[in-house]
Amino acid sequence: MKVALIGAENDAAVELPDELFDVQTNVSLIHQVVVAQLAAARQGTHSTKTRGKVRGGGAKPYRQKGTGRARQGSIRAPQYAGGGVVHGPQPRDYSQRTPKKMKAAALRGALSDRARAGRIHVVADFGLTDAPSTRTVDEFLAEVTQRPNLLLVVGRGEETLIKSARNLARVHLLYADQLNTYDVMCADDVIFTADAFAAFVAGPAMGKSVKASATEAEAVAAGVTEAIEDVADAAADAEDVADDDVATADADDDVATADADDVADAADDAENSEETADDAADDDADAEEEK
Image (cartoon, rainbow, N blue to C red; front, side, top):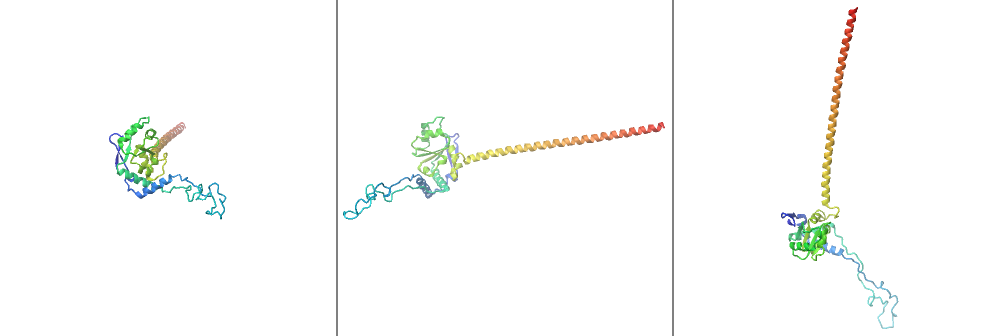
């Protein structure tokens, strides 16, 4: 499924991954996750006082018999004004444990429902300069959709856009790592910035732990950097091997030159020995002639 990349040149489009934006919507799962989310948002600090916690009422208000009235043991009993409360609310924790994969599956189902209805948008450029402008963003969103409730998903660091859109009544702002099923279901349209869409697809959409400083996109970039470093190391190793080969060749040349010099020296020594022998023979011949 493809959607237009709004604000980009040459009518560019972005691909919505089918595993995130075209899955079966499990209504019961979405209901369970939304109920758990709303329950977890409750403070649970409600508290009432029982008859034992209300100040006073220690003495019996009147005697047991002889008054003609119903017997009473304390003016802080529940039937008295200012008395304790029976079975009233006490502080408690309403949160429910919801597995991470269930929350991710519910979110994918909610986004798929919005995508099939054509209510997922990705924006490359809002036309903002360095200064925030609420009017610019409002007019831009009016061109994208006229529906009253918009969920704008932004990336970390897009401060100009955040300051421009946070005062719009029909816009609810969330970071990509804060996207949840309840807010998606409450929104008529979901609008991603290009950076937020890339960050969402890389991490939280698949139920992975989300940290702005450690997304899968950063891991991919780190992998690319590591691959480049490996190539550089391999090139350096190859250069070292080549240098070693050159050094070995030079050493072999030196050995060959030394061997040639040794052979030449040996030949010279042999020639000198022959000359010495000839001289000795001549001397012997001269000695015999003198005799």
